[in-house]
Structure formats: structure tokens, C-alpha cells
Image (tube, rainbow, N blue to C red):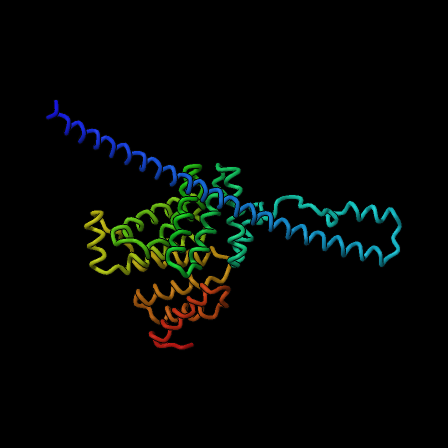
Length: 335
């Protein structure tokens, strides 16, 4: 009996260690879950505070209009019936008729404003709306669009990655809701393409196929979207510019490397130019680069000059101007 006692002690010790380890592991996961729930609560609280601040701003603006109207009425001798009319006018309603910026039209206007703070606030509004209605694909792609803009303005690499990841998650959720909407494919592809700076060679190539797949789907759903033609033109330009070892890497990973020509790129870029209703600096710049790469430097310089002459509307376009000037200098023109 005494000979088996040490093994019983060892067994009991092992069971005790396992039991203690299990308790520690369980407690660790409980703490992780609590931290995750707390993080979600803080994020939701932050969005709610932003909404309250926006609504307070609207109330303040409405009250200022009200005060101005009161001053106007006191300065003119209106009878009581006229005063009753003003009391019922739209400008006199102090409370907001609807939450600020919650119509899709207002959201689109804010997302296209080019103002970072407005776009950040709009993303908070969209996120709150998604919390209330998680089945709206129209909100999902707009959230992805907002995340993309914010990511492109981030100076910190990790912040940029976080915003791209968040945007991709919004779009993936939207694709599960409805995969027949062109914009959800478009913004998913754009966000996937935006993470290439942080990917390995294999993942970059994989994302290239994923990008092309969703742009093709979006273009079938909406063939008149100039942005989609621009994106396919850019993709074709990048593929046509691949170095030999990059093509070999693509073949090694996937068997069949992507193929495209500069002429295919130009076809899409000229189509984007035809469909676009605005002066598009980036598209003109890319046409110039394709023409030069395709051996037509003279025409390329003409398009680069056209791009340069378009006034920049934000810092991103100022960056294009830097690249344009470098190309003009390299290929013999400073005009």
C-alpha cells in the first residue's frame, strides 16, 4: 500500500495542477469576454455622445433662427394673426424633424464633402443606424466608403489598417445581406485593394484576383459607373506593368497569372472619362501614364498636362500633382 501512495500523490498533484490551470484559463476567457463587451459598450456610448452633440448643434441653430425671428417680429408691427402664422412656420420648430444627417441623400452629401471630421461623424451615424437595422446593404457599403476615406487620411499605419479592416467587415456583412447591389461589390473591392501595402506577395496576388472578381460583378450590375471603369483600367495598367518575377510568383501560387495590356487599360480609362460628369484629375493622369507606357509619350504628356491644369480639391489630389510634375519633367515637358 505504501508503494502506491507516491503515485496517488503524484496523480492528485497533476489533477490539482490541471484543475488550477483550467480555472485560470476559464477566468482568462471571462476577462477577455468582459473586456470585449466593455469595448463594445464604450464604442456604442461614443457614438451616442456624438449623436447627442450633433442634435444639440441642430437645436442651437434652430433656437438662433427662432431668436432672430422674434427680433424681426418685435421690429415690425404685425397683428396677432401674423404672429400665429410665424409660430407655426417650419423655422419655428425647435426640435429636429428628424435625426441629423440620417437620410441617404444627406449621408451621401457628407461622404462626398471631403471634410474628414464630417465623414467621421457620418460614419458614427451610419454605425448607429446599422445597430438599429442590420439588414440594410445601402448602409453597409456607405460605412465601407467612409472607412476607406478615413483610412486614406491616416498617417499611422496601424490606424490605416484598422479602418480598412473595419470597412471590409462592413462590406462583407452587406454582401451577405444582398449580393445584387453594385456598390457593395465596388467598395469591398476598393477596400481589399487598399490593404495591399500590408500584405505578403502571395496575399497581394490573391487580393488582386479578389479585387478583379468583385469589380467585374459590380460592372455587370452597373455598366455605366465611371468609377468601375477607372478601377478596371487601373487594374489592367498594374497587371500590364508587372515585372517578370512578379508574374512567375503569381503563376507559382495560382497556376495562371493575371494578364492585361496597356490598350485594355486605356479602353476602360477612356470609357470612365466618357461617363464621368466631372474633371477627373486621377483618371487623366492614369491615361497619360498608360499612353507613355504604351509608347506614345507625346499624347501621354498632353493628358498629364490636362490633369495638372485641374484645380486640386483635397490633399489626395495635391499628391497626384507631385507625381504628374515628376512625369512631365522626366518625359521632357514642364508645362
